[in-house]
Length: 137
Figure 1 (tube, rainbow, N blue to C red):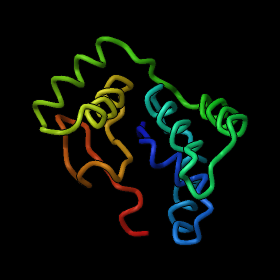
Figure 2: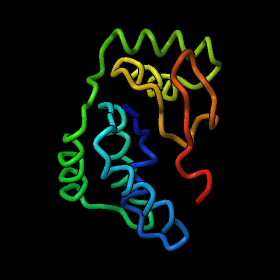
Figure 3: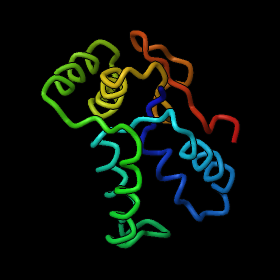
Figure 4: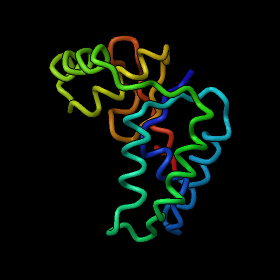
């Protein structure tokens, strides 16, 4: 099982010609059945996808429909246990809380890979490895 960070969802909806290959890669990833998400990822997706300063913002209704469609994947709820694990990971790995929360949500779901361009590609964080699916796009 692989855990998808918010940027995977955002690239999937991008209409920017400069991001065409990333959008194709993201949609290919979302077509797979071995992905997992967290409530944090869905919240971040909604906020960023509807952001007024975005070149191609989604309407509230469009974003909600997509969030609901992403519920086809396993989605980890925000829990105090994940929050406390993220706080520990934040200090242990010297990363932001939000990145640590992504790592720990993936770990809690049994994922051994986090798909993200926000963390170091190839880095192992205590048994959870990061892969940047857009490194070659």
